[in-house]
Image 1 (cartoon, one colour):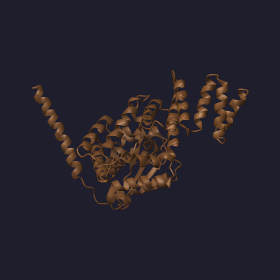
Image 2 (spheres, helix red, strand yellow):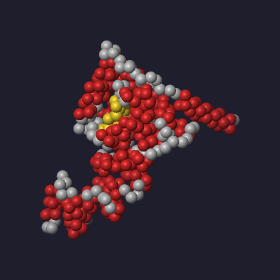
Image 3 (spheres, one colour):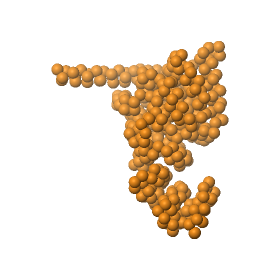
Image 4 (cartoon, helix red, strand yellow):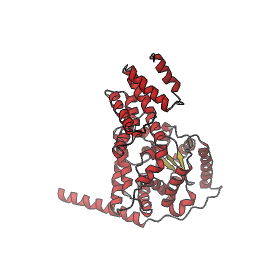
Length: 383
């Protein structure tokens, strides 16, 4: 009897996977949407989103890099097909993993998400998912529910102000898509990836990597740690489902080298923002993965050293020293590496070594914001 139960469960699972694969292969995007009239509820919503988009363009959080902007916009257009002219990508400077799509075609992509992508295909997986919500008009379906209209009023106030992480997580929970909508967006995203020539297996790897951060988190509130998770099914489920969909039709490219070249100018800034986020466990999980993938990255070793120094638990200062020194040996280290070394040597009362490191820091970054403080340290030490 038990054997029959297992066989039945296996057949049901296989049937489900086959059905999802068939759906993904047969799905076709709807025609472009005409702008709704202002007299309609949908038209009023589009108008409000247009105003918020104007605010976002002027926001200090907007990342102003035309080359990177065009690159990400190009990925979205390859995925979106005939909907390309209606999509507008906005890169937003905030160190959290998040992307969101508005009914009028405005999409936000946060730099914390970009930092965590290993290749172009992984970004395509996230963009494709958001485009799936757009073409299926999931946001409009949710907003037709009276219960979420008050939450939407709060949501509008968040555009252009992504630093309000706590509010984002709270409001996102109220606006959350249904599980069926999320699964549909995942299936559509995989289809769009395949059509654009990307390796759909990278979609599952996005969620596998996030799982490592979740497991290493310092707190119990997952939504506060990663706001995107407040509106999505469990990463374990998504990783498994996306993996099954990818296996049904393997192939495609990841474009890792092209991705690294495009984001390289911003990597140090994004790493510094990640360090300042104060989620030490998650940041270490991310940096461990980055170092394993790129063991010659002086910037990654520097950032991990900063995390160890700031956390300052047992043996952390020694671990930080090791990472800082490795960054120096690799060459091309950020100037702040020498500041970190100096601060640790100062704490250990090794003043000669601290002096050498602080002087090197000031030599490399004479106009640093904390240059006066470092000079005060040198004077106080009698050097």
